[in-house]
Length: 321
Length: 289
Image (cartoon, rainbow over all chains, first blue to last red; front, side, top):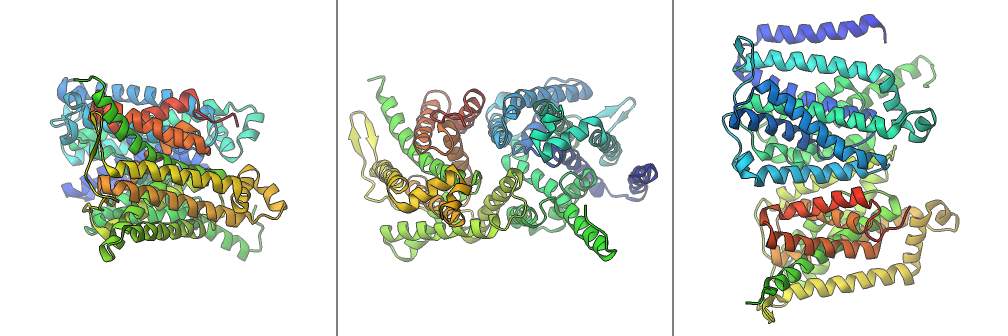
């Protein structure tokens, strides 16, 4: 990709964020944008793992929850500084991912899926049962808003700028990561692990690093979520939410940083637009997962782009590499 | 009072649940053997079995008919899942297949919610509800039905795989699909059959447990995940492992909820799953692959 077109994307992204901030004058929309941003943070991280490294986490809601609960408990119960609490959340999630990842990623195949699934459900049960710490099923109240020096981020509009600037940075970081030596190693092991190994890629280590990265993204999103809503309850971090995140990745496209943003946006906005959607939510998610993976296994947007590219090249009489 | 009195009761309820987990685990194992797919929709087959049997019983109050009807409907669903969702996949990588079966699970659960709503429905026990006493413990006739039918089903399954030509063909496919095809075995049909058998086993498990727990649209997720844990604990793909994993899990769960805390009951399965994955990933009875 040319540098100019790459730059254009970031300029466009920044312009879109600023224009929205200038034009929109409705708290509700900012809240919606904030949730899109938080979901996008999660989905970009999961996409690094799923789309690039070819590993699946069926318990990503747990890392989101660990971030949210660490932030929530440290600030609401202990009165800690929210930014320090956020760092503590990152530490907790990172260490948890590392501990699960070491044994699970040494083995090929389904082991990370199984281990994350088990871990996700255990964490969800602990959120429910450790009432003294987490408030149990009824949740944890009174989480203070984030603040910058001299400015409390207590309105959706102020948070909007923080969340989307963070998202912009994370997107840039991820795009860089994917194009780095490390990123090439990740993609190599997605295609064939043995070949990657023979070229000197320490596959277990690379997979572990990606997994920990994606858990850190999720934890950051969780901390933001706790301070955005000022209230958290276990139901937001259940198995279904992990599935919802996988659906967002699949919809936006495997191995597509920008597609992640789209997948998060569509599946965050859709339930808001259609109130009947809630009853059919699981059916829609299930159908998206199945249909996209059967017919366009690289994800919906990526798959459609591939088809379009295929037709264009065919029309010009070219050869598909 | 005898300090071991509650232990016997825990053992009975643990073995009953464990038998159900074992049947579900065998379903995971059979499909894994022929395809190396982990079918995350297996739990929903359990739910569908229970719900279909309840509906059939509602129309025609005959338990044998409800049992066989439920199993038959779900076997068809299992076959359709393989034919419509898994066979057409162009790029059958593990990730793709996992996501498809997870999608199928979510979809089936959603459809069940539309069909049956969110209420829980009863199914009468197979032979009365009058409990009898074994020393200090109470046993329901349904406990015996679950244990007895599980033994029968596992024995039938073992006989099917050891003695019949079709069973041997399925085993051949699980050892080496290409070699099996070379000697004239229709490997595709064996794969489809493995989905039918697994779905039928799952449905049977659901119908057996329904009189004890009620049938509800979301019962499948947890049962499926625990059956899956049982399969991993015992050793995925092994018949003995599935049964052993199920029983170990059932008893461990009953003891943990009785002696420690009932709130963490559901966590036991996943804690054991993680322990086994980390310490002995091939499972209790699995060999090195």
